[in-house]
Amino acid sequence: MTANGHAMLEAELKKRQSEDRPAIIQAISEARAHGDLSENAEYHAAKEQQSHNEGRIAELEDMLSRAEVIDISKLGGDTVKFGATVELVDEDTEEEKTYQIVGDQEADVKSGKISISSPIARALIGKSEGDSVEVSAPGGSKSYEILAVKYI
Image (cartoon, rainbow, N blue to C red):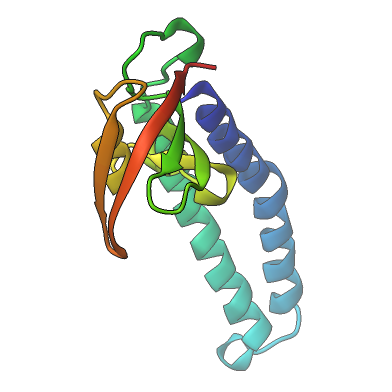
């Protein structure tokens, strides 16, 4: 994963541990004070929220401990590889798009970050500026031309 992706996961982990966990514990404590736990909806909702939060904390800790952080600023070259920011043009619609190829956990298409395991990224890997790529996606086949490959 990229250094930015690693930092985002660390920030989420810290928030869940230092803010969310104490808030949930407080909610459980307040719900417990209402009496009979067998029919206490607030208590059960808080316990479920605690379970979800603790599961996500464990998942984040696992991802961060196994993460291989790659410094994109040290990468370079003319071919597309992990971390590259690629400018493409759709050969049918002439629509230009810019994507950065990132790890699975940090992918966010809306912000232009696509997963290394996505169909577009797999088609782009190893290609160079000026190459044309055919992408087989669930919505059908698309053809793109690579306008630029950058490592920012």
